[in-house]
Image (cartoon, rainbow, N blue to C red; front, side, top):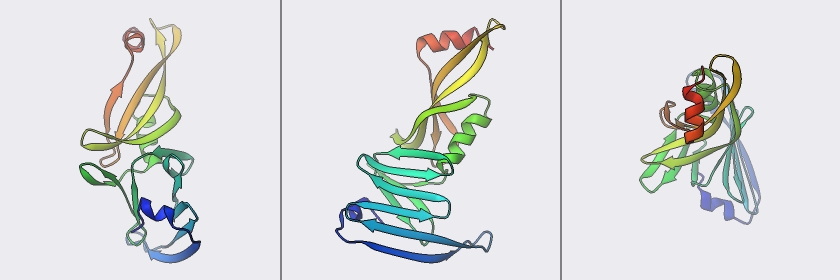
Length: 173
C-alpha cells in the first residue's frame, strides 16, 4: 500500500511486478517509481502521480486533479481516497466518468479541468460541461453546467447551473 506520506522519501526506487488479471487471465504490469519528493504508480492503463497541489490520476486522455490523499494497492489494483469519513474506494475511473456524462445526453462535451473531491459522504468527479441547444428552436446557444459523477457508483449525482444558464436551458431544446 502506497500512501501520500511515502512521497516524501529521499531515495529512488523502481520496481516492476507482473499482476494476474483475474477477469481476463491476462498478465498486466504495474510499476511504482519514487523519486525524491514525487510518487508515480502505473496500474495497467491508469497512472497516479503526486504533484505540488496533491495528486493526478490519468487514464486514456483524461486527467483528474485531487487534493485528497490517494492510496494505491498495486497487488489488487485498487485506488482509494482518504476522507474525514474514512477511506473511499474509487470504482469509476476518470475516463469512465467523462464518458458517462457525454453519453447521458446531458452534455455534448466536458471542458476544462476535472477534479476528484469530496461532496457530502461521497467522492465525486466534478466537471464543467457544455450542451449545444437551440433557443426557441432556432437560435444556437451553449448551456454550461457543472456535473458530479460518483467515483464509487459511476452515477451522475448532481448538476449545477447559474440562474442565467437555467433560464437559457428552460427556453432551449
